[in-house]
Amino acid sequence: MSLLPEHSVLTIKRLEPHDLATAALWDDFVMACPEATFFHRAGWQKIVREVFRHDTYFLYAEADGRIQGVLPLGHVNSWMFGNSLTSLPFAVYGGVAAISTTAADALEQEAQQIARRLGVAHLELRNVNPRHSDWPTQDLYVTFRKEILPDDEANLLAIPRKQRAMVRKGIKNGLASEIDSTVDRFFALFADNVHRHGTPAMPKKYFQALQAEFGADCEVLTVVAPDGRPLSSVISFYFRDEVLPYYAGDFEPARDLAANDFKYGELMRRACARGIRVFDYGRSKRGTGPFAFKKNWGFEPKPLHYEFCLYKRDAIPQNNPNNAKYKLMISAWRRMPLGLANWLGPFVVRNLG
Image (cartoon, rainbow, N blue to C red; front, side, top):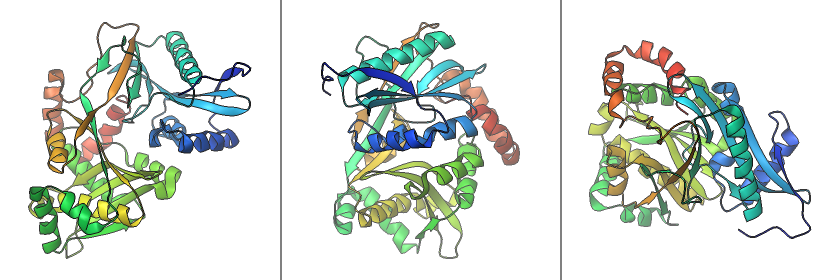
């Protein structure tokens, strides 16, 4: 990032929820800014406000009539998990995306002023790259990214032998992939999957809202058995030349048929056909099954730098399943009837962010 010219006057403004003209300018900036991610898109403001009913502060820095940087923030005030201001709730990437150091610094200063005014316990910036060496940093999460080669067979051969064999097993089992126009099949698989793991499911209306807001950039791919039975599904986000499989679910029989490996192989194949150049396997916690799974696919972990400015707490919150205090809750959730879990889940998950 560079400095603004001396004659430029920088102002920090807030994107209003129904200001479509400025939202379009915001997205134009995001598409061009190297630091920006899919989670910096203006559409997330509508998702966070209307689906989860949280206040948002989508800040942008403007100079000479042009946007110089953006910082999307969501305020989650939960009796269960605390009071926080985050960039961005329900996202794995966030923080400032700017083309000048002046804009980045000004946006973060404004965020800190808002945090103090709201009386939050902490401000969290989910940075891909570090910005504040003096802020406490959550080092639990990593991301996995890898180049997609322009040839299908080359991509398959780039997968380590054991996982490549699983993809071929899915092909031999007659599995097929389909692009769904609704989230119905995905949600049934997703809700069943997270219930088995003892965690609450996002509401179905959330996934419907993602499809409605982001259109073709939010794609549902479902793997089916030869008899047409859905086995595994994934919602992926497309951003510039990248694909990010973000939410996934499967039924238990999917493992024996290698449907999960086949699913990601198919996603990579389809992305290659679209000219996508980067496969972003997304965030995982260190030492977990998903972390090992992605490593086995030949992806190398890259640390994420979630930085915290603490106001009313002494340590970074640990609102994740690895926290021992949630073990009893996870065990109870697994035993809960699926219908009840799907009804209760949205009330819990909206407070997590």
